[in-house]
Length: 124
Image 1 (cartoon, helix red, strand yellow):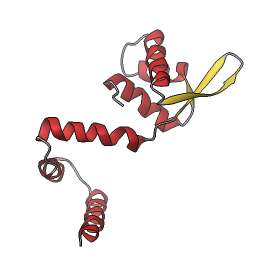
Image 2 (cartoon, rainbow, N blue to C red; image 1 turned 90 degrees about the vertical axis):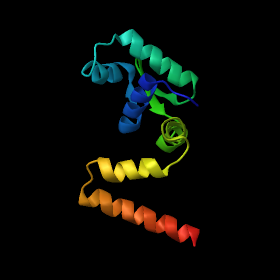
Image 3 (cartoon, rainbow, N blue to C red; image 1 turned 60 degrees about the vertical axis):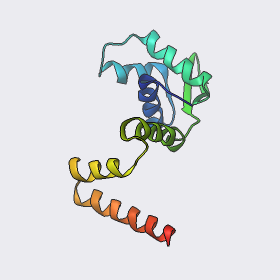
């Protein structure tokens, strides 16, 4: 499944809230950029059509939506595509970039060390 940048931004909000309405999504996005409610509603309709979100319930005339797709289901193909386009399919330069260029705190480094340790176990 492919999502536009705007669709992905809206999906992020659904993942953060678990269940919400189109007006609430619009309110959050409108704080970041000038966007009409109808544009946000169109994106929500597209996400529903792509089976990324679903109508979870109604309260009066208000429709609540909830995510169907989990973050990882969406992230994995996007990250693989990014690695293919930017790093020619090689993940090592991406890992090196993160370690060398990104601001990592001790907790981040310890987490990465634990991931590497687990990955190393899987290979032996």
